[in-house]
Length: 323
Image 1 (cartoon, helix red, strand yellow):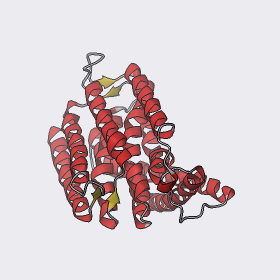
Image 2 (tube, rainbow, N blue to C red):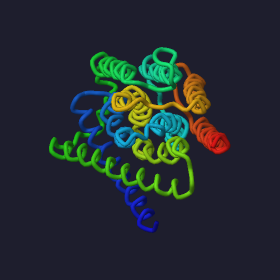
Image 3 (cartoon, rainbow, N blue to C red):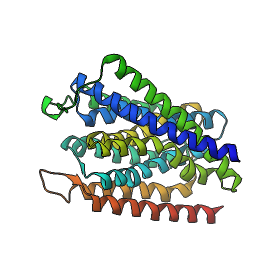
Image 4 (cartoon, rainbow, N blue to C red):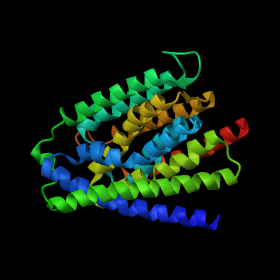
């Protein structure tokens, strides 16, 4: 077990280094491409930080253990909104762009609602699963969203950080590749060893997916958003969270559903409702500021963190009693 804890810590440091490199490389690339920090977060950074969830789900599904796949995504998305966005806001108040309010937050709602409907088989099937047909539908939704994000959302030059100077091309590519590789290796080490620790404590597969695995695979989003907030680049911080949540459902569950039908425990409906509540609370906080200055303040960030802790305590107690 000593080696398990050592590898867990090593993975955590790999995540920190990888996140720093990814933020710097993505920002440099975005400046060169004249994209806003929000778009960078929604695409490049979101894909990179979603790698751990994707890898864990692929490995789990290929081994026939699909029970934790949905729990991993639901738990990760709750953590992304309530804890990660909350912590980032505590560091530096987060500016929320008009585009996020018009497109990304509503798409997050739609993705969550679609997951709830599919998992409860309102469309296809008699069992609580997400099958390959629904997996394809989710991937089509991902394609539409990415098209709207990249093609239809060219930011004006005024939205681009003109103060920062982009890195040389070679350094930009090395930072991007090294950052993604570092987060992949770190996420894998943290997730794998967290699972070993959890199983040694006698936790169920569903509970592991919802808590330990979800927290471990969300570490890249946490580190990336914290680093972005420290650098006062809140466009990447919120874009990372919103983009990761949408891609988690559309891309990761879509691919997972193609590998094996994903079993959905009806007990998870409670956590689905918590996720919907998290979206609603985020939207409420966005609209409590001035009309031309939408922000998530430090006070609101602290509320989000406290709500996350309370929801996790409730989820663990409910899941433990169910098993």
